[in-house]
Structures are given as C-alpha cells and as structure tokens.
Length: 401
Image (cartoon, rainbow, N blue to C red; front, side, top):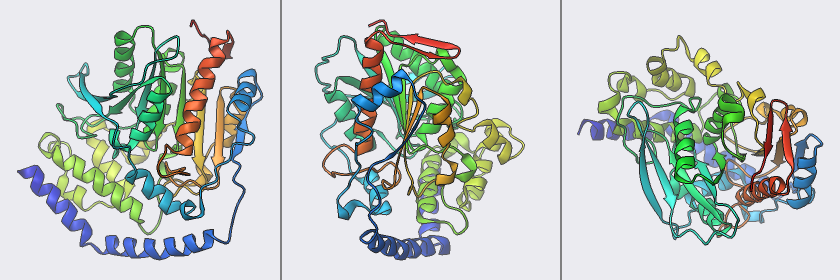
C-alpha cells in the first residue's frame, strides 16, 4: 500500500510539474523542426568503420559486408525521435518467455527470461545469447532480437537485474551497471546448465555499461566468445541531455522512480524517497540512489569507480560497437574512436541516423543493428571454428568446436 501511494505521488508530481510540461512542448517543437529538416538533408547511408588491421577484421569486413552495408531507412523513419521512440514501442508479440529466478550468493535474486519455442539448432555446438537490456526495458522490448537469434540457431536469454524487469527484490540492494558480479554468477550458471555451449552477449543502451564492466573486470576469464554493444554509453557524466531537462530525461527518471517505489519497503532504509521524487537530474539521482548503498563520498567518485571503460585494457574477447551519431541520449563527443584503432579485437560501426537503440529500417522486422550484431557473432564463431587463434596480448583464444 505504501509502495502504491509513493508510486502514485511520483507519477502525479511528474505530469503536473513545470519541467515536464516544458520538456514535452519543447520536444514536440524541436522534433517537428528536425523532422522537416530530415527531408532536405540526406547524409551518406554507409556507416563509418573504425578498426585495426588484423586477420579477424579482414574476415569480418568480408563476411559481414561492412564496406557496403548500408543503413538506409525510408523517409518516414529518418527522424531521430521516431527511431528512438519506436525502439521502445515495437515488439514481436509472438515471442514467449519462460522466467527463471536465480539466487545470488548474498541471497539476492535476478530473473532470466528464456525465449520459448527455440528453433532447431543447426550448429554443431549450442550457442547461448545473453541479452542485457537497459534498466527500464524488459524481455518484451528485445523480443525481436530474441526471435531473430532463435531463428539463427541461438538460445536467447534476457537478464533482468535485481528488482528490474518486473522481478522481485529479496535484498535491500540495487546493483549499478558498474557492478558485474551478478552477471558473473549468471555466466557460470549458464555454463553449468549447458557445459558445451558457446556463450555470447549483446548489450543495449545502459545494458552496455554492465557488459563493458563485466568484460573489463574479468578479462580473459569472462568465459564468453564475443560481444556486441548497441548504443553504448561510454561516459557516465555525459549521458542524456544537459542544461534544460529533455523529455527523455524525464521519462527515463520517471520509469526508474516507479520501479524503485515498488520496492520502497525494502529500500526505505537506504533511500530518501521524498527527496527522490523531487529529483530530476541524473547527478542528483545517482547521488541519492547509490551513495548509501555503495558508501561513496560523492557522485563523481561513484562515476569514476563505475566508468564502463575503466578496465578496457583487460577486455579479451572480440567486441563490436554499433552507435548512431544522432543518439539523443549520449553525446557523440564521448565515442572512443581511438580504442578501435588500437585494439585489434575491437570494431566500431557508426551511422549518421538511428537514434538510441533504434536503427529501424523496417518496422515489421528486427532492426538493422540487431541483424548486424548477430551476423557479427556468427562470423566470429565461424572464424574460430576455422581454426584461427585470436591473440590479444595476455589472452589467446582458440575454438574447440
């Protein structure tokens, strides 16, 4: 009852607040202007590639057709806000999931949504695809990716972090995307359930921060074969809009608040919910949310310790980044192009259009980025299956298929 009341107050205080009304009106006006402008400007639809010459890169360029693989959405899908909003609205309703709750060592619980009716595996070896959606997303939001992955012979599973994705919260602890220890236990569980499986990962939006933290912290012992980041945030301090709050800030924070209010009884000891309802900046939100839970002196210290690229030198698996230069959530200035020119196992694909986790060229099909992600994973697994060893300094990976 208390949680429902707090949730109602969160929604009511948002929709009646001046910042929300200004954000909605301003976004509509700006979107109309940008949408009209998109008819007059037609930038190149061939993405820019950033990579270091290597045998793997040559194989990827050839097999994934990256040199001429166009992202060319129809005129009515070129607007950044249409791309971004549709990515949260469009779902593949025929995809069904079976939920499995997995208990962590500290008695916390995460939820695994396994895609049902998986197609017959045509590969010599089972391949599990772990999908890491953003905090405010659920398995339904990535159902198109799950459906396509199953069709290509993968066994898709969506990870819902503690308390998110309509899951339970059994301990008074919400993990940040910079803490990959739950994901570590999930990977070990998958390997125990499918001992001979090849495990791959795809992160979307804020889920990329968890993926990068995991790959960096556990390095060559990450126990996965390849990974893809779609619309990754590379800098915590540069995420979302700055200055006047935009509609995405408001909606994203509102969604987070509603989720937290559901668990208000468990978290009341650590979070001041009255103050949380008044918070409409990500700096303030992270300070209220994580300062007591993680005992950080200030939010800057928290961001530094949870920077997605803090251990980038330790990442030891083939990794693809797919980013759009018009992403309204993150600044294109923060995209680390040089990383992909330095590390031979990194590859970045940047499009001019696509929004945040959008890349939609056909509303009735999986997105362009999702298709590219699965083609990339197929190609990397095929590369190792051909007997190639992938050497990255400290790590040498060779397939045993």
